[in-house]
Image (cartoon, rainbow, N blue to C red):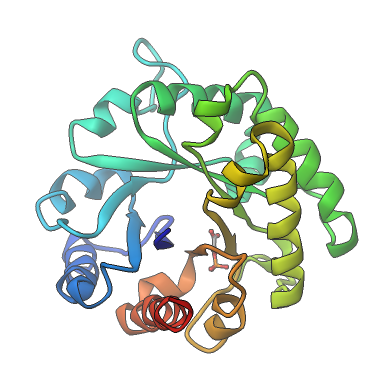
Length: 259
Ligand code: PEP
């Protein structure tokens, strides 16, 4: 299984010119790592159509989408519209959407169903809740996992990329505290056990489960050294092409080392 590195640009960068330069710097280097690493860039909606012309090895992702397929919903974007611009992935259930925009588990569940229907790969974040603390993460993750996967078949579950992303470890959160790589490893393994209960141990072992929360060039080796962690969701550090490239390279090196 290839390692997966997903950039979450949020409302950045400030111009299309910067967005284009950021993505092409990664795109031009992808042939050095593409046998072991897949990179996805989740860009703001308005940059997706122009960026689709520059992405060949890098895949494009959206940061959200509507759970409805069409109709009168002001300000929303549908899965079908994303597909028009070669978008292959979509981040769903990010902590910032849960905390600031009131996104609930049932909305995330409905969005997962819609994404799968239109063959978009859902990148589902677990770990965002107001009272989240290190010691109650298993409880939060298991509750969120159960709720967002309600009524999904085994086949559907296997198409999802799950991310353990404790909200308190996101770099831009007030009082952010980076998670230790031990904690990340234990929680990724915990999530894999939850998956195994639904799809069996062998299938769960083959599913990508990522870690997200202040991963950057200085700490990436702490996370990449654990084979349980299939890659990273990267926010702030993905806005600096050199920082982002070091993260990609480190997961690549680790992959080569283990093969
Ligand atoms: C995120 O919010 O998805 C994220 C990974 O952010 P950061 O890397 O900045 O903590």
